[in-house]
Length: 336
Image 1 (cartoon, rainbow, N blue to C red):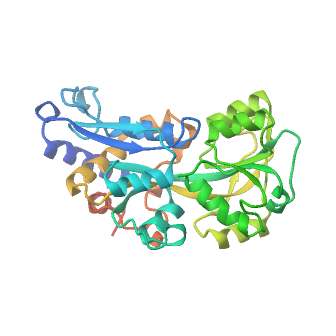
Image 2 (cartoon, one colour; image 1 turned 90 degrees about the horizontal axis):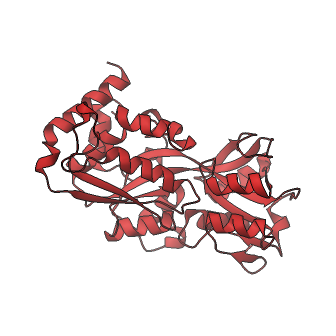
Image 3 (spheres, rainbow, N blue to C red; image 1 turned 45 degrees about the vertical axis):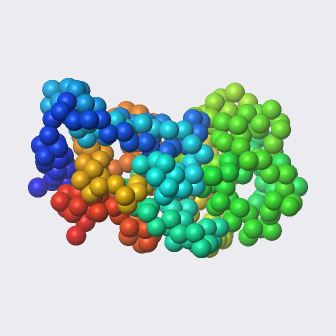
């Protein structure tokens, strides 16, 4: 039996055992994403659409929504990884999108989160790689991160995984909050400030193409810093979840060169408090053919969200799969 057949069979079994959507009370399911100018928000919206099937909606086999019967999923704009994981832990969100490195540190209570383990975090799926963008004004360049000393630098917003990781990276080059003029801004704000000459550079980890950067590239223009192999090795030492990656030339107007940069996996995270049946249904809906169509026709990064890569790096990360998701992957033949 092929992978698609297995996934379809699992999705049909979920629909049949869940009953008729119209007979159920609605279940609201909040997914924390990121800023509107990033990648989490549009991808989160697509996932929310794919897993939803509100009470009274037309059945999947008659052209209706093919999500979990009775489920109304909503993508909420937030400050991203740290906020999302904290809200999932505290029961303020049912799910969130978050970077792998931050999720591991928060689950274990390590690093910045020392002594504060977020033991309720559970993984549904690895989604796609988030490439670190170090954005510079058009025509500008740096040799290494050490050149940022004394500069006005956007380090992403507080509550984001980008900020946590970037501060760890910068320390390897002797850069910290004391020797740069740091700006805690979301992606859209950073792009606007760079365009206006109010900052000299900014960092943001997201799946390309990032809408705020697309706009910046087509209006004022921009450059992306390409890291050396040695620098990528140093970054991996500082933040092991960040591995070498590449942003192909042509993704952004005027950036015609390949950019070597570190990347971290984006995860879909839920709370251990959610029932196994609910998460099983959500995982099934995430990987059905209807959601596949939505992902393929939405944000460009959606094409990289596949069941074949859903478990990449998850076991080694040390954060458990939710039992409902684990049951789905075992039935689909993706997990032993």
